[in-house]
Length: 213
Image 1 (cartoon, rainbow, N blue to C red):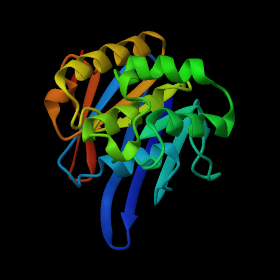
Image 2 (cartoon, rainbow, N blue to C red):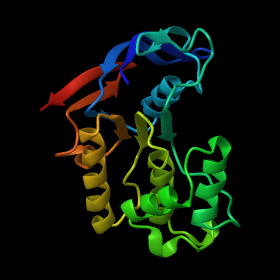
Image 3 (cartoon, one colour):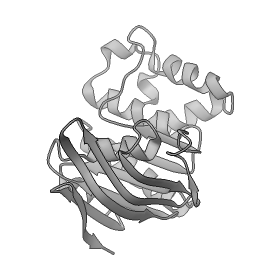
Image 4 (cartoon, helix red, strand yellow):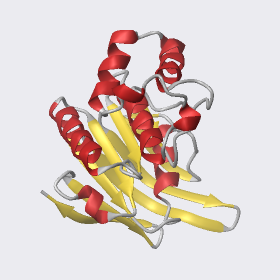
């Protein structure tokens, strides 16, 4: 899935958050967004997903504009800001509830995804008992489990132990090989080392390319 942002600007009342963003995200690549907290990373991700409408500009998925028709992004799953699940349900139950909305996957796919993110042994624990890292891994599992074409992760390694970080990095690189369009946002540049094909920095309301492979 190719994503193109054309002259995207976003203002809340008198506060400018983003101004004249022009960028393309192509399948089979991992993109990084870095910037200080409050720079606008999460706002940009929400615009891509269709959760926010831009003040001006267009969001194109395979050359079809979604924001003017007020549609959500097609074949896209996202973890933005922080995971939010039912506290009294287990990790597995939470994923099962979400999967039942569209009914495209079942127990097999959920279990396989929990294995991928190194969370299978904790699947029957209530979410309220999850550590920050476990919450984050469940959020990543939610993004991966239905095999979307576009995968968006905000601060994906927040609170995650080194072993799980290495495992999830390998998973994301495999997803890239399968042709997924992957966008990661973080304020920690080291989280993107050896992972992203292109890194953009958000500052002064705009987007600047930092590096590319």
